[in-house]
Image (cartoon, rainbow, N blue to C red; front, side):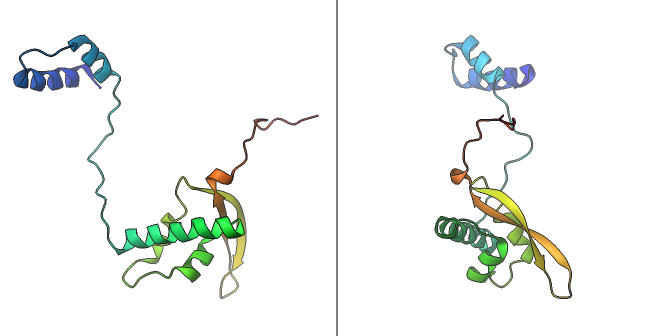
Length: 136
């Protein structure tokens, strides 16, 4: 936190309390505080967010049974509710619980080839102790 912001916070506290205990310690703690920019994001529980949570829960269960999942499998088992834009599917696997394993080519109608990601659970990832070094 910036020094001028610390002074503002302590000014408010001094209006509430006659004496601030451990003021130096409080100043140090506030100085080490890293504030986020902007306003907090609103968390709404609309149909899009509920569908994403249902899709993630299905993906976790599917991965535990089958090892990997892709968005097409999720869409087959958890259809989008009416009124939810298809672009919502992009947010399902962008979560710390999932790790991309590989790209999978998919042939679209009309012959175009598109790649989609196949994912596993992050907890299933093995520790990589060699840091990418080649072992001889």
